[in-house]
Length: 405
Image (cartoon, rainbow, N blue to C red; front, side, top):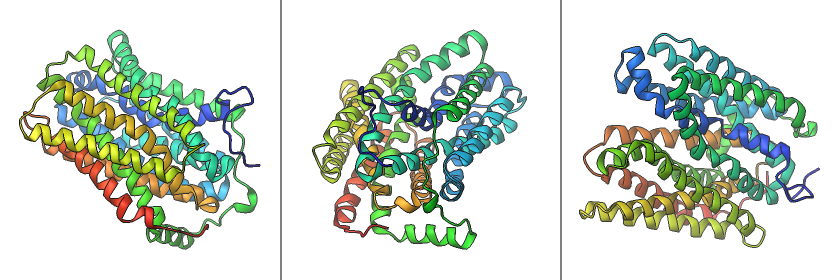
């Protein structure tokens, strides 16, 4: 039975939603905990920093590619069986990383980590759509951001702490334990949410036609790309902010986590405001205003840097406002993506996730290829993402009046 309220009768986030939020945060944990260990891995294995960066790229590729498989399988066999496989694969890859002796092995294992980890957020979003229906989904996604948003705050700090005490391999020990805990919680907390009457036949031709139809669905594609472009700006921030803030503006490395954390607090706060707003305002209206805010602040930041205004406070304000906007854009965009996809929520969630992470990979690669002694690459990529998302919304997304599938 579907409900419009994801909260328990006492007003707390229910355990099943907390679990889904934790599964969604696997990708963020696997990146943010791992970032402080780059120099240690390079020194221990005797490789350059660029080779260590390939381990992050391979993880992102696994995240993007794997989603295409979990969606159709979860629409056929239910949400839990594919999720057990996904988290089990992630657990085994994390465990193997502990014992890896060369960078090439880690690159391969990180790909399989991503291949498993992506199942967490594909199937979690579909399960919420199953349980909440279209109207309650945006509220639930906003509440999930409370847990999801803690990852960028705590993960770098915890990763640095573990790295200092026990070395970089202990980070993978932590990720292995986290995956094992999720597996246990899935058994006891998560109920199967897919109605057997909605199970879709798993045939290659049918799956390909589903993806083909979704790629030609303007409503689906426009909202998926709006959310994806906004997320690509987030990836640009993750990839480019260490260079800009630490090396160019001289923020001590030990304080970078505080800046990272303050921006994550902005994201969390905005997502909780959004959870209240969606009960009173249409999703499209909230999405329009938050996309406008993200585009505006990122464009102002880029113009200021291009004009030679190298103000750290101005840059920090721009980053904070963009990431806060994303805390409202993300839940509303994915709710609109899945609003008319109830009978194929897993497949739709998978394709949307793949598109969004593909844009994130392009954004991250752009940051690595375009680096100079200014913040212009970072602010320009974020501005391009923000303005493009807003333009896409006005030109395509808000004009669609689809019929329910």
